[in-house]
Every structure is written in structure tokens, then in C-alpha cells.
Length: 217
Image (cartoon, rainbow, N blue to C red; front, side, top):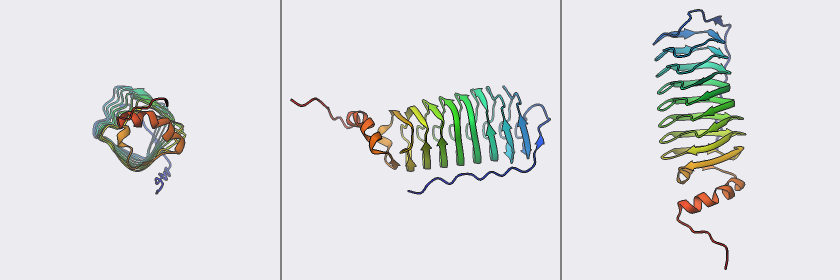
């Protein structure tokens, strides 16, 4: 199995963001957004290139169809952030505390999500390639209909994950700290799990296959 290719983000000297508010289809290049309150702002279709977003509030921030490239997102917080159909390429997401993030239909390539906690992450019909979830907690993430290729879960807790209709290719779950599959256990083809995880999943797999397990007579 090929491991995921991780991003190698090397930011240039950055200028502070001084515009106050995001703009739809805005073009942000080489900027540092530090402790900015972007609550409710509309940056749909915006492009962020060689940027750092640190400690920003993203409650209900609209970033639909945005492009985030060669950037570092650190300590983001917020509920209901809309990143649907966005593109994240060569991006590091560090210690995010987010809830209800909309990433359905998004494209993630060479992305690391390290630390933090994300509740109700919506990745339905998204495409993930060379993505690493590391040391983070994902509560009820929804991968319904998504395609995952060369994706790794390292020391990551997956709680109540939905894999309905997902397509997996070279997905490594062996190092997941917790693997709790709520739906879609039948879609694990293309993934690698550990022997211990197989034992944990045995009751769910048996139920999926219609096998009744009873104590010996």
C-alpha cells in the first residue's frame, strides 16, 4: 500500500490582512489572517494562496466553491462553516475546533488535518486524495458517496462514521485510535484494517452478512 503524500507548505513572508471583511470571489495571496472574526462573512468563490489563517472564527462563514492552496489553517473555530464544493490542495489544518462543517462535493488533495475536534463533518460526495487525519477526533463524520484514495487515519478517533456508498482505494485505518462505523461497513473494500479492528467489527460484519451468532449448545 502506498502511503499518502503529505503537503510541504513553505509560506513566504506574509502581509497582515487589513480589508476587514471577505469578499465573494476575492483573491488573497500571501496574507496572514490572525484572530480575525469572519463570522457570517461571504467569501464564496474566493482564492487563498500562500496564506495563514490563525485563530479565526468561522461561524456560518460562507466559503462555498473557495480554493485554498498552499496554506496553513491553525486553531480555527466555528459552527456551520460552508466549504461545499471547495478545493483544498497542499493545506495543513491544525487544532481546529469546528462543528457542522459543510465540505460536501469538495476536493481535498495533499491535506493534513492534525489535532483538534470536528463534529458532524459533511464530506458527502467529496473526493479525497493523499489526505491524512492525524491525532484528531471526528464525531459522526459523513463520507456518504465520497471517494477516498490514499487516505490515512493516524491516532484518530472515528466516532459513528457513515461510509454509505463510499469508494475506498488504499485507505489505511490500521492506526486509528477508535473505529466506530455506524453505517456502510459493507463498503470497506479497498481499506486496510488491523486484526484487532477486525475483531471489534465482527458483530457488525456478521449482522451485515445476515449471520446469527449464538453461544454453543
